[in-house]
Length: 443
Image (cartoon, rainbow, N blue to C red; front, side, top):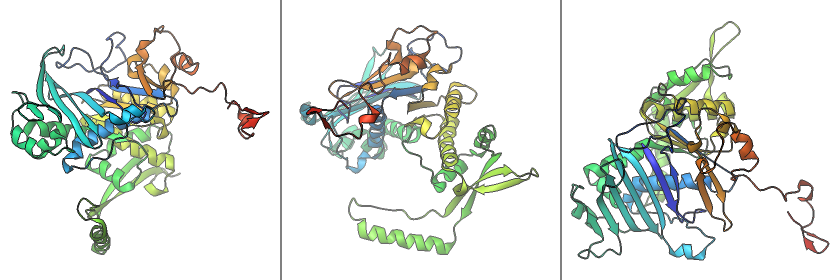
C-alpha cells in the first residue's frame, strides 16, 4: 500500500514536492473507503487526483514515481539514463535528483529513496518504522558515496539481515543496492522489489495492442467483470471474450528469424535483445445482439478507437482491483467519458469491488469529479507553476472551504489556482504581426 512519494530537482520540479495517500481527517467518511492499518495511525486513501493547467508539471510528478519504480526494477544492469534536472536554475545541474516513497509491505511501514546525479547513485537509504508515530525509526541500510565509515560507503543496520557486505562489493556506482541485493537473493530486498514490480502499474498512453490487452484479460480471468461493466453502459455490447490461439509453426519460424536478425545486428553488449514471438496469440471479441437477439462477434480491430481504449484501461483497472496494488494513469478522461470516470472512482471507493485495498493515482482536467460525493478534499491535489517556472503541489485541504461549497465552480473561477491564466489571450490577435505600432503585442 502506497503512503506517499516525493521528488526534487527533476524536470519541472525544483524544490521537494510530495503526494500523500494518508487522509487528513476521518470526518465525513460515510461514502469513502478508507483503509485502516496497524502500521500507521492515519487512514489511507484509495484514490488521489492531481489537477492543474497544461504544462503545470502534474504529469512530471507521476513520471517521477515511474522513474523511481523503474530504477528499483532495472538498475542492477548498471545502466541508468541521465535523469533530467530542473533546467531553469543553473545551480540545479550541479545537484542530485532525489526520489523517495513510503509504503506498507506485509504490515510494516518502510521508507526508501535515492539521490542520483549524472547516472551515479549519490545516496540510497531504506528505513523501517516500528510504531504508528514514526518516532521509532530503524535504519536498515544507508549508502553515501562520500560516507567515511571505515572507508566504506555503506552502513547496514542490525535488523537488515543478509549478505550485505558481499552484495555491496558487487554493487557498482550506477546500480541501486536494493536491486542488486534482490538479484542476489536477499530476502527483504526481494520482497520490496517484487512488490514495486508487480503492484505499481502505469499508463501514460492508450496501449490498445490486442495481444497485450487480450493476454492480460485471459491470464487474469477478467472476461466476466469486464463483460458486466460494458453490458451496463451504452456501447451496445453484451459480453467480451478472449480466445487463446496457438500460432502456426510457419508463422512462428518467420517471426523468430526476423528477431534473430535484429539480435545479430543490434544485440551486442548492452544492446537490443528481443525474445521472439509468443507461441500464442490472444483474440478479443466484442459480443452484441442482432435484431433476432442472437449474439454476434465483432473483432477488436473493428471497434472504434474509444471502445478499444475503454477495454484496454478496464483490463488494467480490474486487474489491480482483483489483486491489490497501485494503478497510475495520466489523464484518466482521455480513455473514459466523464460518467465512466466517476464510475471508476466509485469502484475504488467501494469495499465490495475493491476488497484488496487497491489504489488509484491519476492526473485529470475533469472538473465534474470535484462535485462527486465519492471524492474527498484530501484526495485532490493541485499543481501549478511558480514565478520561477517550477512545479508546486498542494492539497485542496490547504484551503478553508465551506463543506457546502461548489468545488467545481470555485476551481474554474481560479479560487484554488492550478488553472491556465488566459486574461491576456486575445483569439483575434493570434494571427496578427508580433509588432504593432512599434510595440510588442500583448499575447
